[in-house]
Amino acid sequence: MTSKTVSEGDTRWGEARAAERAARKKRRRIALASISIGLMVGLPFALGVIDGVVGNPRSAPPRQIAYASAIAILIIGAFVTWRNWRETDEMQRQLAIRTWAVIGLTSFALHPIFAIVSDLLGRTEMQNDAWLGSTAIGIAFYLTRRVRS
Amino acid sequence: MQEEVEMKNRLKVLRAERNWSQAELAGRLDVSRQAVNAIETGKYDPSLPLAFRIGRLFDMPIEEIFDDEQDGE
Image (cartoon, rainbow over all chains, first blue to last red; front, side):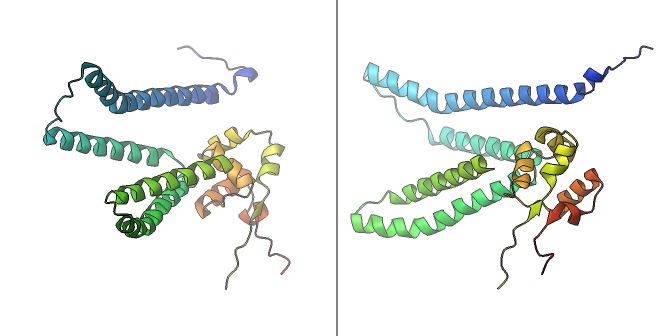
């Protein structure tokens, strides 16, 4: 049986290893997120460019594929959220809850306002702007709080 | 109407006395470094369980670490 002698300088080897593992995990997550976003945004964009160059836009994919993609994205999103929730601490959870509250509250308030405005302007698509607006406000709230802490 | 009470704490001093970095203290408390920083600067008040963990880590009662500035009243 062998024994390892740990010198005074090595007393933080465990912390260094944990930090290294955390950095590796972070790099892996960033790569995964980049690839996912690249596929979700980049692929349709590239296909659009090709269609534009060829001058022959292809027909829209069947609705079933769109539904399956939406369900897959929702499942992946729920899984990632659940994993992040488990790994964060109470301060980050509180910030997440507050961010969702801000998004919900602004959406609640913006939706009827935008509905009235869209009626007055004779436009019908402004409810989507309410959704986008509330999401943007929520992200701004999250980033501001994150930087301040 | 109940007014909001600002909490002060001695976490930064206690940490400095032990030569711990924020990351090291965060590791011992099982929270993020950002949480330690936010508590130290008074931007976040820890939950009661976390306050007890901090008290146990420094071997001190909670009221010796956190102060709601109402002692003189």
